[in-house]
Each structure stands twice: as structure tokens, then as C-alpha cells.
Image (cartoon, rainbow, N blue to C red; front, top):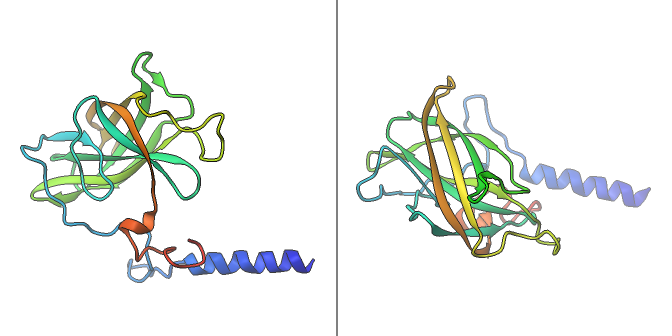
Length: 198
């Protein structure tokens, strides 16, 4: 019983270390938002572009390589980015990872629906650091990550807050290297960096 009580106490302490004291007006708190980066627009930006990037949009060539991230919780993801000149300050996204030979979702992936804020970079609104979950876990050797060289097709629909389709696009990519990813590298002041929940 004492062991269970100690475990409960440690669990509460871990949650308390990562808790946030955000006021109704949005002030306070200790993290949860990616650091603001000084991003640039790519050369000759299009009205709507798909790419990659953890902090800033990075253009990637069609059939280009995209690194897969091995996260601290044992999963894998890709960083996705986009730019949209006429989407406003935020956009609703539906993202799918498809097998280009069948146009069916890659097993272990799912339809990702998210709302992202767009940040002006030299007059071109962009978002980066959008995580796309990928199949496999680091401890499961039988159904691990997609191997390097696997072709994928990322299909995206961007809609207004009212649900009006603004843009759709596809980007053919190839899985590149799998890299260890630590969120504290880009945001060392994050809520769990150096704390009990790290």
C-alpha cells in the first residue's frame, strides 16, 4: 500500500511540474507554444505551398526526401509545413499519408485534422512544426517505422473556420533518415524541459 501511495504522489508531482497557470486573458503559463522563430519566405512563394519544417516552412522538392522523427514517447512523426497567402490567420487542415501506388492510407496512419495559426514571414503567412503521426513504435521491431526509401503521398485540404475548402494539394515524398527528436532542442524553455515530466 505504501508503494502505491508513493507512486501516486510521484504521479501528482509530475503533473504539477508540467501544469500551467494560464489566466483567462491568456497571460501566465510556462509553455505549450512553440518558440517564435524569425522565419523567412521562400523565394517566389506561391499562394499555397506544402513543405516541411519544425520551426519555419521549408520547401521540399517533389519526390524529395523527408526525415522521420523518433520522438521521446516512442512514436514516429514527420514535420509538415505550409504557406497560404489567402487563408487568413488560421486554417483547418485535413492531412492524409497515402501509398502512392494504391492511393490508400498507409497502414498505421490516420486522417489528421487540426487547426493551425499562420504567422507572417516577409509578408507570406506560413505554419511549420505540424506533426504527422507515422506507423510503428521504437520498441516494436516487428512493426517498426517505415523504412528509408519508402515513397509516400501527403494529401492536404485547407479550409476556412466555416468549413469552406480553400485549397487542396498533394506532395510526393520519400522517407529519409530517422532522427532522434527532442522537443527541448528547439524550445529549451518548454514546460517539461529540465523538469520532472521530461
